[in-house]
Length: 296
Image (cartoon, rainbow, N blue to C red; front, top):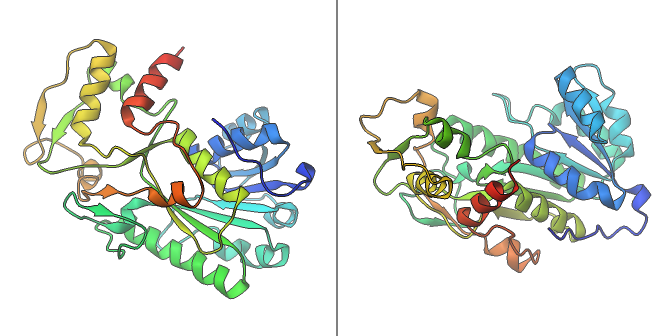
């Protein structure tokens, strides 16, 4: 994966503060560290803090870590923590320090769930936000909080609406091998996806050429029904394809069922036209083949 260098010539001055250092943020950190970036990452797990330190990330164990000191050193800020009922959990406690530090780039990781259900139709970044789930509504709230803060402060905020994320350690192969994968079929249901390495590529491209106020859909070129992805994974493994189950009668948890509330295909033209991104994994077929090839 080719990562564009940030525009700042002095690599030693490039410091990323990752608020909610999860799966996608880790991929970005792995991409930036070879360029000399210093990464701060927040976590609430002592075990994860130890793992971050091993990976060369300075852990900020919450509660208790000095966020203000880390923010004062940060040239770039990535916010990816899941929202709570009040919106973004970090913004109220970091707003003043970010305002004082004036980072060159702020990225907020949202979700394509903010668009709601379009019954399999296409959406892009101009589509009105009509979230169909509580998760989606809270993401809209958090997006707007960050937008209001950045506009009032005159700071460059970019919003990235991520499709369903997969990658190393996150994919269908384990369940297919274990015989627990399910092919739930809801007529007309379609999802968009994105490999985590392509998320990192998009974020790095934005860091290299920030556009204040920009919103980007981050997804691949091949939206597909979920049952097709499971079937393809089974074919790659040479295992039987799990039988289809009707969505209406399938036994599912309320959380699992809620993921079928939205059906849409997400356009990704903007990451290509504005950021020059060429997806490494333009289809789930490419991504799954690579995951299987790279598996230990």
